[in-house]
Amino acid sequence: MLVVDDISICFGDECVLDHFSCHVKKGDFACITGVSGCGKTSLLKAFIGLTPLVGGTIRVGECVLNEKTCNIVRKNTMYLPQELSFPSETVDELVTQTMRIGKVKNVQLSTSLLRENLQRLGLEEDLLNKRVSEISGGQRQRVMLATLALLDKDIWLLDEPTAALDEASRDCVIDFLLKQQKRGKTIVAVSHDACFASQCSTIIQLD
Amino acid sequence: MGTIDISYLSLGIGLLLLLIPIYYVWRYETKLLKSICVGAVRMVVQMLFIGVYLRYLFEWDNPVINCLWVLVMVYIAAETAITRTKVRRNILMMPLIVGFVVASVLIGLYFLGVVLQLNNVFSAQYFIPIMGILLGNMLSVNVIAVGTFYSTLQREQNLYYYLLGNGASRSEALQPFVRQAIVKAFSPAIANMAVMGLVSLPGTMIGQILGGSSPNVAIKYQIMIVVVTMSASMLSLIIAINLSTKQAFDGYGRMRQVMKG
Image 1 (cartoon, chains in turn yellow, cyan):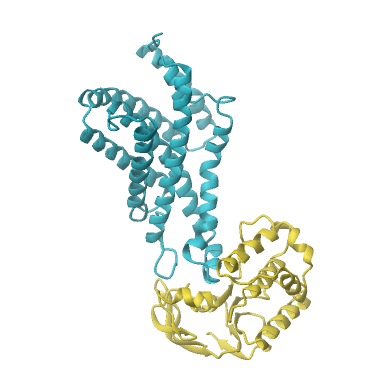
Image 2 (cartoon, chains in turn red, blue):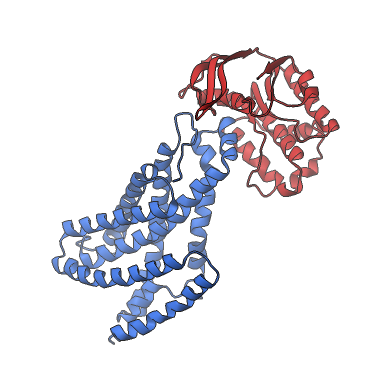
């Protein structure tokens, strides 16, 4: 599903990944792990062409990622960044922003499914009426995960989805993701969390 | 009814009023002291010069010279916008020039040819002042909007990449930033339009009345000036943003270095 072949990622003179290769099979739940600054997020973003490569290729499904195919790849990919400091006033507005992408792409969006996703991620429905500044970073990230799940993409790229969560919330997220894996989704997540990594079917260890 | 002239001595006495803003700019250490002083001197010198060259432009009344003069104004406006927005020249210069020229030609000539129904739309008496007022407004709006657009985009890149990474096209991912830029640049003009005649009496109208026009004529001109400046500003802004974003991103939609320094 995702094939990374001999890529290098450099920022100026410093290369975080040098001639690196790996692959993730369809339906895998993969965890990219490693010490801070080793290029985990850069690798995750490289799958959708958001990190410039110095060399090598990335194949997503049938597409070799390049300037012409990156939009096709992104249409089949869901991306949840770690930092979500959006300028939205309310949580509902934050959700609408994401739903708009779905509307443009003619995806059937269901409010009842959003409520169900929120519940499965351990969130109250009335969270949607709160101001963004009133909710925690962990709650915000789970709201976005619940919303992005509605887009029903085949590949999920998640950056530290459990970083700001307590144990109970983390278990909800892991459970949610395992269910999505069973539905045939391919999940690649960056994580520092050993418990999270232990639930994944593939580990991509970066030095 | 003639207009009372202002002697150079009286003008000097009037200019003393600038000491009030200059004092507070200095008192609160705003770092605007040099800008306000240079700006005031430039304004006086430029306005004295404009008296000279407008006299010649009106005397010659040549369409080619008038158009060349407008092109010079376009270039100066684009240069000024580049300096104030701090966006790199190679990204913004041509988009601004194209935006200013297209908006001036379309909106300016619509006003002069269709609304005023002038036989000669290039007549210096109308062409030069209308283009001047359009360019002045387009400059202010573009400085605020383009500056807001790129600085917000730089600061909140994660929102842009989040939308892009989830399948939005580049223009869809840029929508929140364009929206923010339009709101910031047009809110004062929209608020001003709503209270015009009640709270504010605009300069063009006052100028015409002081120049001896009937208030009825001055009012109609003022309404049209507000409409054409707003339309031209919006058109030039959309053109400038759309053309500049073609330079500001690479083939993957990743943001290049757009701000100077």
